[in-house]
Length: 546
Image 1 (tube, rainbow, N blue to C red):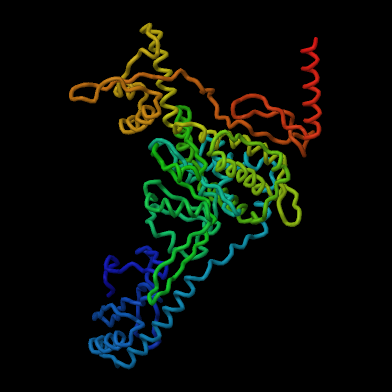
Image 2: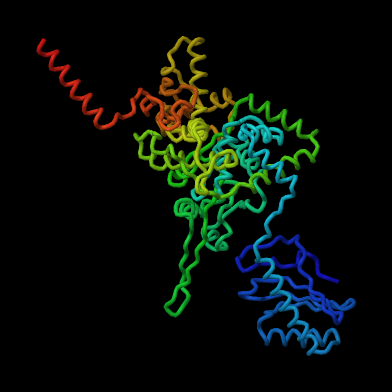
């Protein structure tokens, strides 16, 4: 009989990727009645295999290199002696095992066949893509699947996931406290992605991405469970997003080098609880924050109860519908005729990177609605509605990049302010003169100790909260608030974005909001501006004479 499964070795293909132990080993039947089971290791580069030759209750188990003649001969002689077989016959069987193993590996390395949709599946998917309220429909279906609330987050994240088919995809960083549901958002979006376009990793080493197959990452959505699991591969991820490929050169001996290149137009989804993220890495993502309000918690609990009573068939139908719809999205170029008239705040250095995200958001909106947009020379033409949608979502997705605090720390800051305002009414003391400890703040907010320590530290470093005393043995640490609410309007707003109007589709309205919030007139033509300047000069001269 065969040894227990725990004794089996992991099968590894040429890419170095381990295979699940639960997958049964390939069996190669031999016509002469002697069955061989082989677990392949590192074929075809270092073809060592474990060969089992059972005969009645007798068993011969050995490990050998199938491409090594002496190894095959030694195995054949030993097995023939133990099993009472002809050594020549055993060697012939091993030769056939080699041929079958090579065929097995060849088929496994072939690209997966394209998914063919039935006529009814295709018509249902096209009907969804042609729905004028497509984004709202996606949000509603995600709620039906169990992910309620956070509508803007779902819109932005879904657009980023479909942008994987474009030349410059968007990536998402979901930042929130532990247990807030950041992984739930990422998983909900990933459930709508066809399995052949989705890659999941829990941990990446520094060299993992360099040794992928050349096209294995191209136009894929890569879901990374936690940022801590990709810390070693942070540099490779940054290069992959910026250069859209990875190149690795290694020494091959005798003065030669071997170069590997991995194509990587990917949409990366990462979740994290950290507040001290590397700016080089975080700046390449659209940052989303999970709704941590009590109202959202009630909605989630209610949705979890409703999900228990939902028929599995309804969930499967919705998933197939959206996955088929994404399969019908053609990777076509996007043309934006309104781009020269767009505006964007330029008062920060980060605008150079944020502006590319903004343009990418417009492209993603047009790409998702490609079955509702006109085409010119095989390219999708951006419509005014695409820009209006992207502007609304940019306030949500890019607004946080203007903040010097992470969203959870910003929420903690507002909770501290609200609490201290309540205390001023009772104690008759101004907010700057009130003191509080971490324990008092935890009791007020209900935050966990580790979460409180991390985000309060960020507020202290940003000087919104001032450390008053403490730190020594037996002394409590006290804090005071050094912020009067300036800049808090209750809504994210990325100033300086304009959109075409129905009466002026080719040009934009007369005013727009700049980064400082003032109204700004669009520049006049050079001749008109010069004439206006001379008129103004003459007017001022007349006033001086009078």
